[in-house]
Image 1 (cartoon, helix red, strand yellow):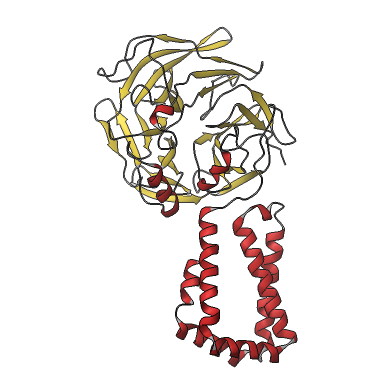
Image 2: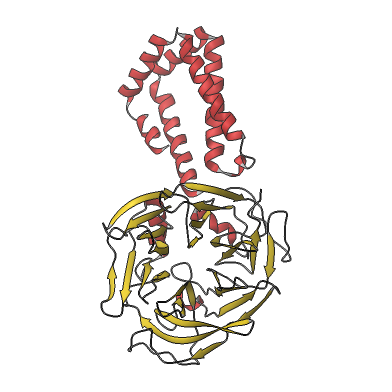
Length: 454
């Protein structure tokens, strides 16, 4: 819209277009083609049940209707249209300036707003026709299934900057969610020696957590290692051993790794030798204005890093992007998958060549799950600016989608879309025996849907 509006400032350009239009106007085939193209575009928009809730679809619908009317008028009243075009050419600025203002106004509207549908203020925690629910689960930003698939491990997310000022950040717990009983409890944590972290990183039993991204991996020694990004009291990566006790699972703290002060981490992916990859979102002094600029212009804010006990942290080549978020390493394929929330894409980086092998575009991706040869990823079907309508609403029921992708090519396997449901702002989708579970960094519930739906 901005570029089209600017063209109206160049009279010679539009004079050439109008002269060409008049020269070929007697050939009604041109108007017929325009009419058919506008009709096809219009019908395509109307296929979406929720098209009126999106500024892009609404704007395109109005423009195609105007094209339909203009081309139809040209087909049935050619002399009158010729007179209108001649009048516009002689009085160019009378039409050009209003068109310039109109198109730039529409451009700013599209830039600021994406979704203009209703965002319901939900009442009690209840299922709907698409999603089942587990209630009283706060801000389960990430989800990990235990080896027996009976429990989910989730971080109780307390917020990050710049979305919350430091004084509003909250601590949280690591949760154990019993899927069979539909119950949630804080994980039982015992404290052992620091054998999986760095010796300079210390943690006392009384110190609280602020957990974020998580990963679970069976090590070379057959022990189950759980890694958790932690934001309190300082940035660290916490390591736990996952142990089964009768029918339940517990955690033993096995160490932590201190994070350089310049880094602000989001997600983590373990390797079987104890090394790991993490996503550095942006600098610790990243502001709300910086976030707005990055979401609009997709400028680089962070990158992925690798850590091992010998070399510490190092930047991974070809991972720079706008808000790196979800990360997963596939050691079978030798690919590192990185989701860029502000960049609106997922990249697959070949760790041998250090180059991006494939990409997939989707809106505001978050955590990535690799399960049974398929990548699972959430997408917000709205812009980040639309979140202003979420004020005072938990959960916020903005529309979203769940994608299943093929890892080798990042081709789409299947997509599920959700509008006006019992949750929103999803951050993770985890398939289990009971269906696909969806967690959110801003919710009081977990939801799930059947793989066979719809």
